[in-house]
Structure formats: C-alpha cells, structure tokens
Figure 1 (spheres, protein in one colour):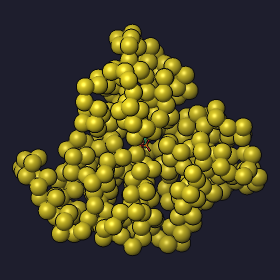
Figure 2 (cartoon, protein in one colour):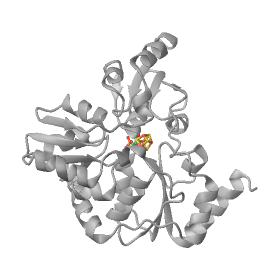
Figure 3 (spheres, helix red, strand yellow):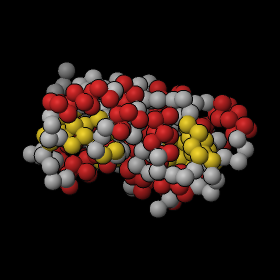
Length: 303
Ligand code: 13P
Ligand code: SF4
C-alpha cells in the first residue's frame, strides 16, 4: 500500500497531465482536501466548476455536486471518483412528486436546494444552496414557494421572508440528528464558545445557535471573529479546514457523531484511479441538463 505523501504526489502529477482540477467539499477527508485546488461549500464549488479553466474536473464530494458541475460545464469531463457517494437527502424528492405538488399550487414558485437530482432541478424554477437560500426565495416573483427537499432549511428561510414557504419533508441524516440538548450540553462544557450551526439543523437547534451559515460561511465567520472558542454544528470534516485556516482558534464539534458516511467514501486511491482511467464520468442527458441549467444559472444570477 502506498503512503499518503506518495499518493498525493502521484495525483498532482496525473492532474497536470490531464489538465484537471480537483474540487473538494468541506466535509471531505483531510488528505483529500489537501490535494484539492479548491475546498469549499456547494455554491463555491458550483461557481468554480463553471469558471475554472480545465479539461477535467475531479469532484470529491457527493453525486448531486458532480452533477451540478457537469450541468454547468458540459464541455468538461466531470469525474466522481466513487459512484455511490450519494446524498440521501437528494433522494427524498422525485420529479413526479414535484410535478404533482406544482399542480396543487399552480401559483407557487418551485425553489430546489442544490441537494437534489438533475431531474428535480429540471422541474424547478430556481435552485439555491445553504449560502444563498434566503436571497433566492426573496428574489422570486411569486408570493408562495414550494421549497424542496430540506424541511429544516425551508423553515429557516421562512424566518427571513414575507413569502409563504411550503417546506417538503426531506432532511439531512447528519444535521437532523442534533438536538437542542446537544447545544445545551456543549455550552455547559464550553461556556465562552460561540455556537455556529448549518441551516440543515432543526429549528430548536437553530434557536440556540449564535450564528447560522453554510459550511464556508462558518469558516469565514470564525476567521474574522474576535473570540477564540467555537462550537461547530456541522459535519466534522470541516474541522480540518478550520485547523488550517484559523490557527489558534479552538473549535469543538457539537457532536463527534456528525459524520456523513457518503462524504467519507472518497479516498486518495479513488482520486488517483479516476485520473488514470478517466472514469467514472458524470453525464446528464441534455434534455434534463438544459432545464436544470436554467434553474442553476438563475440562482447564480441572484446578487
Ligand atoms: P454547504 O453548501 O453549506 O457546504 O452544504 C452542503 C451540504 O451537503 C450540507 O450538508
Ligand atoms: Fe447530504 Fe447531509 Fe451528507 Fe450533506 S451532510 S451530503 S445533506 S447527507
């Protein structure tokens, strides 16, 4: 078995040869984040996929993220090193269910979280991520919004808009597990710490937090915050970026159990093998990609 440093060197060599860029989500394993050209949240990675100059994108994340990259950059080869790295929440709404919901609320806009399949995006008016969900909902013309699939994010957005938000019944297996008691316990252990949580958390957890943000929003906040201690209510992979970019600040996980198993499936060997074989590639049929692209590009145009 090759050691980490040797594998990382091999990947960097192959990456150059393939004219590839490596994008990694903030929840990826530390050694994968370390070889990425960019580690970020869903919005930053989608923007990078569209903007960065390369023939190939190796997407270290989960399926909907690689699909979004493939939709935005159809001229590039998008590789998802582990095909079964999926987001269970994205499977909690299907295109036909959404069409039915739309038929029941014909005057509503459909806003889909980026954690959805391409065919759900194709049925939506506009996409959003955790970083821009409030701005996106406020930007649509309609007074009512069907928000899919994350009920917690939908309810969080509803706090910041006059529009009627009809949340779906989906949830994240990782963030929905935090309880208000977890926050109380963590605050007792670290009474001076600022509590930051992701908007996929339940309303009772959000109520007890000091700050709510996307994964990269959490990193930015801590980088610029005057305090020294922080409790982090999101997947623990983010602690690696926090250690690297916010040295001297102490970040405690709200729960050590907050692990997204799908985000952890991608190891360096998979990245290396994908670069050698140029597989597995993500291809979204243009009939779906074209309509999904419209929803994503509308989101990217929201100031
Ligand atoms: P971010 O866009 O905030 O990184 O969130 C993605 C995600 O899947 C959170 O669980
Ligand atoms: Fe999906 Fe939750 Fe994993 Fe994010 S943390 S990819 S929402 S399962």
